[in-house]
Image (tube, rainbow, N blue to C red; front, side, top):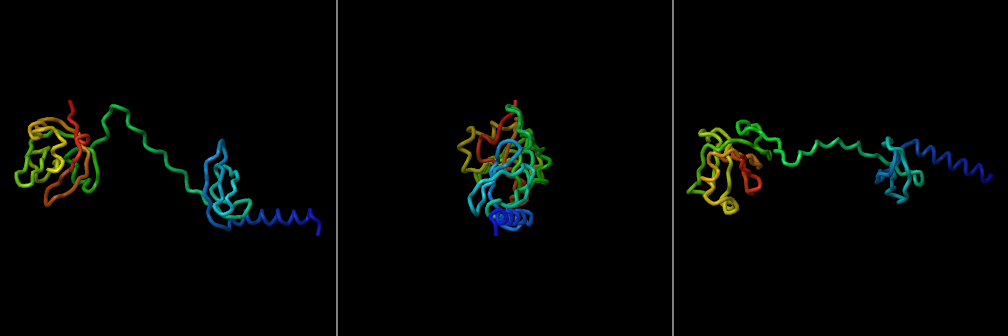
Length: 182
């Protein structure tokens, strides 16, 4: 066999391997322009691939690659100095088990003699509505006499909404997560 025909057979076999899609995945790196530079996990060689191509094979060893779908566009970041998107304290039951930002006016407070926790209530009916709970262990981080400090003020609080017995609570353990609004 001549050298040229042998090279032609090798090229044809390599081409058929690329078309067949047989082989394992490869790791990929973004390249410049409209191509990606992929690095094969098997032979560790880099090779260019068109940016829109999602599957193929390494031209050197035939290892199969499958690229992940493009990542979704992230939501726009909040404008510095603006408030984060918040929910009403009335909607608390719909977000149980989730971390949320809640905005509202504190109409009553209670420092429990039994547990030592501070409760900030958005409604006089605290049995069936969301309240903010500041655990006793974290009270020293907050303003002294917090019951009087927060009473009557509009706040925005970030925390996890949980159910304790029959009460719905937004747990706040850091003063940065509880801001008084003007």
